[in-house]
Length: 133
Image 1: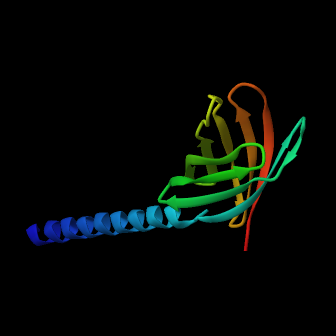
Image 2: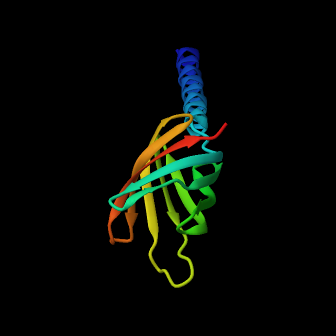
């Protein structure tokens, strides 16, 4: 009887370890689903016209850093995150401007993103982005 209980306990422990290994594998795969590192051609559409900034992203885990370069804003650092299919980042304020631009969107596929931009409560826009090859 004792050996049957020991065998059942050992089987339960092995199942628990297998479940943990499977969970860790799924979590690691989820982090690696999207790697947005690279240079992106964005199109930002406002009521006043369309801008075409270049966005350079570096992704480490779920953290994003990089630069946003446009004719209107020059070069600005950015910081953000990737969670599942969602992307968020903010541009650092520059010079006399204390307005923080916040981008929030979705990852359409490995080479395309889209979403909205908030101009620090002073209006907004939509954006699309395509990874440059």
